[in-house]
Picture 1 (cartoon, one colour):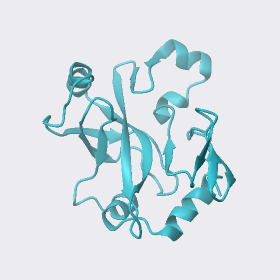
Picture 2 (cartoon, one colour):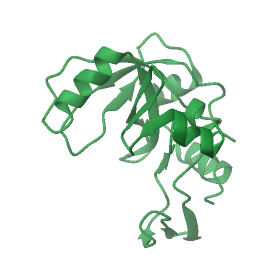
Picture 3 (cartoon, one colour):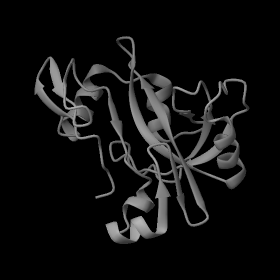
Picture 4 (tube, helix red, strand yellow):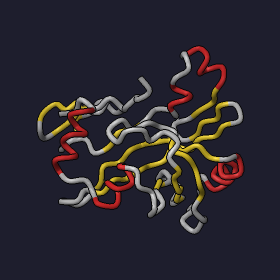
Length: 177
């Protein structure tokens, strides 16, 4: 199974237990993170360690390069968003540039192009969808966006916003409700 979340477990309707920090947080989870790009995660563990190098923000798999980003889906009936911590596959020049700007304010950087490197099952096939990468301040991951002309279900939901009923569906599908 290519999806590997942070393992959030809802402990009550008003809180959830975070597997990263081990603490209970108020409210329901509003993000899901992929540990690695799907193609890297699909490798058996011993091959993965031998063939790929990664941190929580960057991954190199042979001559393929990936950047961990945030793909925010705004809520339509309340403030905030549901964030998908997804990976984007990029060309070497984009990866190299990100290494150079990693610790600085890069909000003035031009957008970069990439391909979504995770399949988000709630939206059908998303692996390989073209994305735009917007760099920002060093304390935040780059944000992903789609071209206005993209007609995929995920792009349409980002444009329209996610209603509460859809948010609940995602929590249920991820085992968080």
